[in-house]
Amino acid sequence: MRLWATEVLPRDGRAGVLVGRVAMDDGPHVIAARDDGLYDLSALAPTVSDLLELDAPASAVRAHAGLRLTSLDDALGAGSLLAPCDLSAIKAAGVTFAESLIERVIEERAKGEPAAAEALRLELRRRVGGDLEGVRPGSAAAQALKEELVRQGLWSQYLEVGIGPDAEIFTKAQPMSAVGCGALVGVHSRSEWNNPEPEIVLACAPNGEAVGAALGNDVNLRDFEGRSALLLGKAKDNNASCAIGPFIRLFDETFSMDDVRRARVRLVVEGKDGFRVEGENAMSKISRDPTDLAAAAFETHQYPDGLMLFLGTMYVPSADRRGRGQGFTHECGDIVRISADQLGALVNEVTDCLSAPPWRFGARALMRSLAARGLLR
Image (cartoon, rainbow, N blue to C red; front, side, top):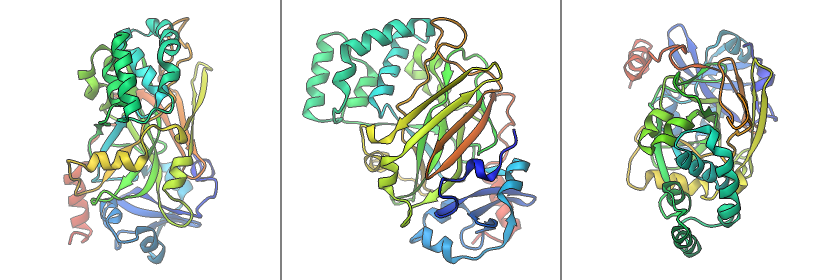
């Protein structure tokens, strides 16, 4: 898969402050994407985690000259554009939209069997779909709705985190394990019902402040999680099952949290079999504000290396692919494109998680690379 800069940059090009990582011969370098190439920020911040902790990171990046390492076209052609985060924890907020809430309840009731999904979808939408719209989680109205759903025998663990007082925050992937734009993303070989999840990912400093955002693909196994919520780890965290990129756009005068709240995240999946599906994730419909989700993540935990927080999705593909009633599932070779005007496009090809390049470069390897370059201080 050959990508070009014009395919992945935001609609306003490099007007904002775009930071990320690129693989070089001596290890990964923190970079800024500028008009004429990717510039090394290592002297300013040897890791992205250090960068997120700077005072006014966008201003600091703009003021730092750095050395030009390569062009974005060449980095994409070489497959060397990495996920734009390193030591930060990678977490995700689940069930943050009414639309995806219904799909989670379907998975639970279908026990991981896609053939049962459509009838359940129609029934649940008829009985509770409209009631969930506009309900503020944890409110008195949410509590009243919960009591009514319990009375109807429709309560679910997913409804609990969707409209209850406590947000679902779970570990999506290990630090350093996310793949970047242009890389292969992995789906478990035993999964027969799975999907991409197009999301915005907040980049948070260690103090809990969100300082930027990126695009993310929270690759999900619907059959595994549907069989048991205790399989969430297996459904979410596999080799190459987390993609983030192409860059973190830092908050500044061109891009703010309000832009995140207004964003429309688009998904297009194109298969070698000619199958195509597309949809949109309207962040204006999120049930919990992004700042509230970040606060929930930091409420009883600390992240000294920062946090990348997936905000959830309202769009879950459900179009039949392998036959009537089978719903959507990935095939190897699918091209997944997740895009938003101000964040660009995250593009990946789907493969089996064991066929994707194994994750070998972790925190120890990064420390050795930084030490060899004289950047540890």
